[in-house]
Image 1: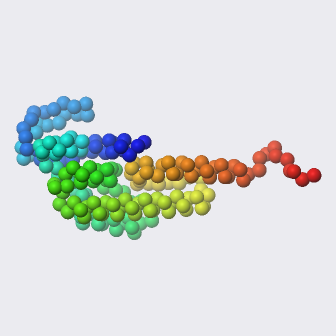
Image 2: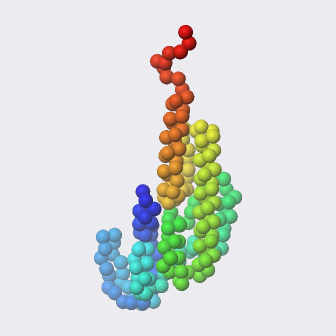
Image 3: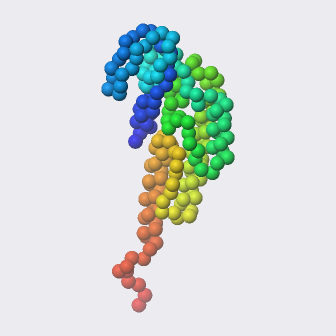
Length: 185
């Protein structure tokens, strides 16, 4: 799966917008939305919120977790724990990137939020690399990686599968085959 595909999936998450226009209910494949009334908050998919924002038709309200204090707490918890902690959104990285790229004027302390999200991302990827290193050194056959997001899995999947293939080849080459004869005479 490509990062763009993961981002596409993230765009289905709901976000609150405050429209500045009136429109009756709209009927979409994913469900009905509306009616849109100026000044009244409503939930829409992220893709629609970004589209409306680009056309200056709404203000996007950041989700509750997109707050400096909450992100700082998440970062510190991620640094303290040996395992991966649950993230506030399964698409926290893509969601934040889209909102900060298209609606940073609607998000208080946008630069600090960007820094915290990057710190969380870096901490989790470092933890993932350490887990992979430990997995290889201990010659394990399987691993349990809870609370990883799809983008984190996608980022490391190619590396992991290639590494596992190399490990398999090395292990099978080191084991003597059953029908092999000794070369000693």
